[in-house]
Image (cartoon, rainbow, N blue to C red; front, side, top):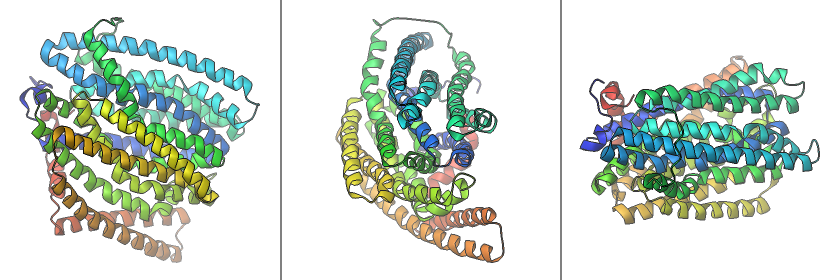
Length: 547
């Protein structure tokens, strides 16, 4: 790394498609590690709390700081800040860039502190008015404990964005693992001592979220200081660059928060459906996040600084080529994951969650929600690729206009489905509404991106998608057949139930992966070569600056 300039990728235009994909796999590796730890935490949480009212109240309460995190934290501020930060470094040098960072951190920190204080006051008033022991009382009590989490995680999000701008992806990508580790520790050691009932023990988990926010922020500080950051307060609202960041941030916050807003609406409506509904949706979402974090979320993280460099030099051809390659690569990973989760929804939920207080009835409720969520992997990834292109060009208005339209569509579909669907499927209908509205969001973003930058090569993208869907469909059918047959054989052999579930599901997934790559090779899908190249050259990540 001696003599390496992390801005070199942007200054010289030497970002290659393989570098983007390798960086995405690096981020995806750490993100997947977090997702695996997340599954471990959810396995423990499911056993302790199941789909109880306590867990549903926690889920709804936890959505509040998560919504603010999406509005003001990781995605929104990074998307507004990174292009301006990179531009300042390129034009005015490191000292000016760090001065800008210090001003942004100061102003955002003060704003977040005000939100937390005001929020706690409002929640305390709501708690005083709510009947003791009611669902509302339970939710606002938990939310009041977890609200300060937004202060710490939003500042951590700014720090992660700065490190990403230096093409330092590993630490930011591994930071969510800290939440999972703290969560697991509190479930195992604090919750059992927080009370005798699960309604009392769930408060221990809320305090775990609070503690995790502190840990996640603290982990970023040493890395920032090594890059040149020096702590201190700097209030300057007259700085043109500061004003530009906040001007970009407002629309970016709403644009990137479309999914979180939809999820928040779903949770609130699910609480009306039944005491089990928010928890069942939560567990199904957790299974969606694992494959999504493998590449789609990681690709979004890597694309923003890369596309910002191309946009700064008005290299529209490079932007189109990068989007084309990224879409096909993401779809190559997401398609088999989506159809696989659809085909194996119940066995997977049963294997991971079903124990102790997570009953077979909980499995059924969660599995049906997962089946409706699973196709969403094919459309959730669209925004992950398209939105960074708009933000790289410092256009935050287009995604927010589309996002607000799709939030409205999601709410309208929610109401329609809740009024017409049977009770046992009402919570799953909320998942379907999210998938449909996100699909519209992705399609509209693609249309406007075409208008701004030109065609990214739709003909090759659609041809590639057709081949990939053919391979993924055959793979999912084979996986379901293998799992069913193997589970029956193991049951006849007298295997214990949990061992049977684990062996049958993992064996079917392993076989499906082999079938998928064999089918992709037979149909000559070029994406398989992109993935192979990314893994073969992954050892060069340090030389490329992707620590």
